Amino acid sequence: VFWRSERDRIREACDGLRKCGLEAFFKCINESQISIEKMLKPSRELMAAAESARNGEGVCAVRICDLGVIAFTKRSNTDTAVHGIINECSKELGYAVRVAVVK
Image 1 (cartoon, helix red, strand yellow):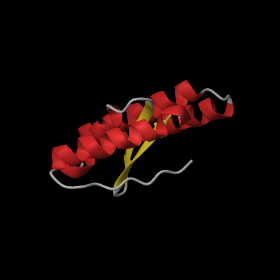
Image 2: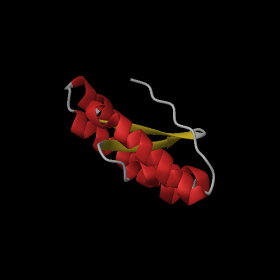
Image 3: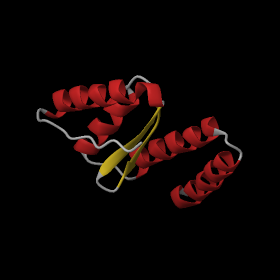
Image 4: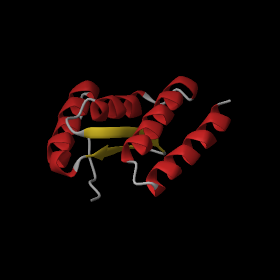
């Protein structure tokens, strides 16, 4: 069931991107993240990073992937979101975290 619904989300996300419908794309990313949390039980560290990102100002979508988290932000809020993620996640985990920004 997870993989079937994930394929449907990927198709919907791709369609949204083709039509420049970023809201549809972000919705699919966030739905995928919710499924990951329910079905795959990510580590405490990944969950803390995802939750910190989700709470970030200007963050549109969050998705755990491999050994990290991707957060899509509005360009104008990127710096604020990054600092919020670092501060909140570091506080939650009790050690400093690193963030890479790709623009």
